[in-house]
Length: 482
Ligand code: TXE
Image (cartoon, rainbow, N blue to C red; front, side, top):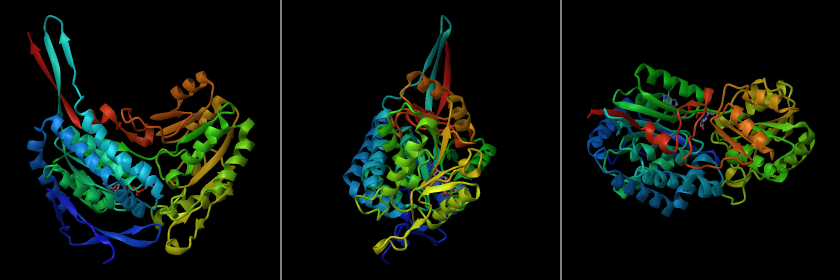
């Protein structure tokens, strides 16, 4: 057997699924089976929740210093094994190795280190009632929480949820994406070696409708933190709502990238290449609708198209590949469907639009050209639905009011980028854009202390910094009369 067979991590031990059934997991750059993952269901989830519940008694009473120290140790171990993690992430997702090595895995380590230290500074409020008494707020961990993560930034987003949950004193049952499960499996081994007590973190693999749903529906799971598609988020919110469970949902986006004529053109162009095609456009923060002020529309179109044409789509293991493969055959087909739809809707493909056939070990991989489309209005489906691939559209605009109206005219509201050197306009736009995150003259610049999340159909709640620690704790007010 050339591929790995993964196991569930429950109570510090690796288990086969109760069903004894496994799902195939592919390396999308080669089209070959990369691993087999447990097809878990209710029985496995029950076992994991039971272990987490048992572990909670002692973990919730463990001092924040000790919890923090353990998380920092895990961060160190991820860094010591950077190359192995990066290779696994690339083989699982098809993303360039350089991206896994410099972004995904370092960020996973940073998540543990950040929350391992943050919890030691986390404080709660007190409210004095002059001459009468005092209120103080206790922040208690919730108990067992569920963390469900997607395939685009597998270890990065999985750890972004479990690190604050653990830091705050909760025990976790995590369900990584069945499309990219391998680095979460490696993390389980690492947590065991780092000395994380049994049952504090449990990782159950399997499909969304079976393992994910059983986790959401378990009555002992007090909160669900989810990142993924908007439709899945809606289903999870419905179930959690009926059970009065806390939810944090980070969902899709259709983010505007707004370029004014007075911007620093070169910096904007280089960054726009990244915000359009990084990770094959499979980042919820990618700017898929590019609005360009009319005076520079033709220049932007010419230079952006020329530079996009030159981007190297190649074997993700080649150091100089800018784009690797899309995450799966299904996903490639979804993205190609939208390119066809764009043409039916009257759009013109300026470059790209087709699958890429590579030679050598990647002949069967699911690669695609970076694609630019123009000539579509903002209301068409291609400009309203999340494509989540290497496809952007160009839309010219005349005035600030017009572009604001178009930028906000979508069901999503995750992030927006504004390129301008007019300071007043930058503030004015930032205030009026309907988005949880606005970047001015930059993209994807992240400070882990800031609130992260979206408005409208892009989500509910915020991750990051104190927001995450507040989500994973329950405030209790104590009032004492003098
Ligand atoms: O995500 P799903 P999919 C968007 C993107 C993509 C679309 C669908 O547009 O094309 O979503 O992608 C688990 N109960 N994003 O289908 O299904 C699932 O197993 C509980 C944006 O791959 O939402 C996985 O672990 N869990 C996004 C996780 O949910 C369920 C990143 C996400 O999978 C479940 C990824 C259920 N009923 C896709 N069904 C972003 N915001 O960054 C599925 N899951």
